[in-house]
Length: 255
Ligand SMILES: Nc1ncnc2c1ncn2[C@@H]1O[C@H](COP(=O)(O)OP(=O)(O)OP(=O)(O)O)[C@@H](O)[C@H]1O
Figure 1 (cartoon, rainbow, N blue to C red):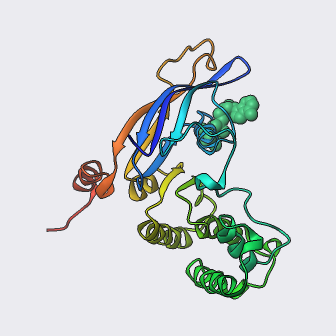
Figure 2: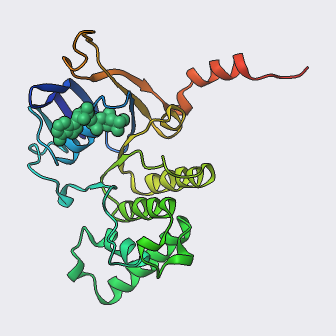
């Protein structure tokens, strides 16, 4: 049995189908990148994985358990969006991320101090140690994004759901966050689902790249059919042979 088993998922809003017949299984520790046209249902798929929404039809099982009725930290699922608390400092936000699993009240004494030390290490890694005592509202958009990612990762979830987490970051910060995510993934063995519009990023970070698209298309009614997974690429080794072919044909090598 696979760690995540997604069987015959259909999702409609009213009469409009968004996803149809989505079937995929994922092993624990895999990094799944998700790409596809705007509006084809990628975020909807993440919300279903989180159990924030129930599918119209079909089942999603994690670790063999019955389909979840609501988002649950006990199942180790953390969604990075909306997770920053505005009334807490940057450092407190990271500690809160870690204590989602244990409940705030139970983190005290030596455990609290250990959590503070780990939070400070995380802040260095995401480059926010110099603003540890600031409130999120005083940070730039990119810094708030990094805080949200740091907080989600601090909880060391079994499954991490990321919806375009690096889209707003400048190229340098983006590369640093790629490394950070890679390190944490190696340390924790967590399973990651990441929606991205950047194909290169998807192949760089992912073990697999799932492409969502509409297999059926009615030109008179573009909303008549939903999307499904049309490709499931093996992206290990950076998507080779795909990238190797591109490099061989496009890289100019002077004699
Ligand atoms: N709660 C909802 N009720 C009705 N329609 C919805 C709801 N949520 C999403 N939709 C519609 O479902 C479609 C898929 O939305 P979704 O956000 O999942 O797409 P996406 O692939 O993530 O898009 P993008 O790449 O632009 O973020 C969109 O047309 C959206 O308007």
